[in-house]
Length: 153
Image 1 (cartoon, rainbow, N blue to C red):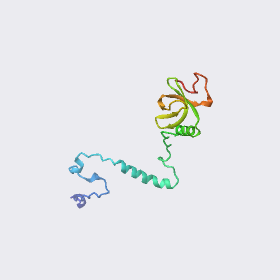
Image 2: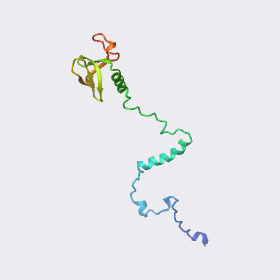
Image 3: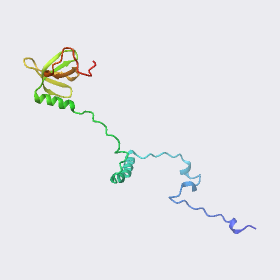
């Protein structure tokens, strides 16, 4: 005779919301259907990362995001500073063009692509920067054919 404990089948325990879905039957539509991978949006990931690094940043610990080297600027403004300095001092300049022509004058105005050169006794010129090979101050007169250091053109 069988014992009453072996004859009884334990009742099925319903899975809770925190329990894994292993207790579900295979005939359940959620289990048998193809599941789509749901990726979090980039905004959600950024928010989570910001929340995770926020306490570390307040604690004085350098996070991985802040330890990266900043990207250098596209423009250093050194060229603009040089032009302004020469314009204010009204320095006589010599511009050597790519075709070898020398233009003497004072830089009166400049923009991103051009220089305006004021010449005494001759018409003023608007010169594209792309056509300038190099320039120097008239005080630093160079011998014919000399080029500045590092100019290999």
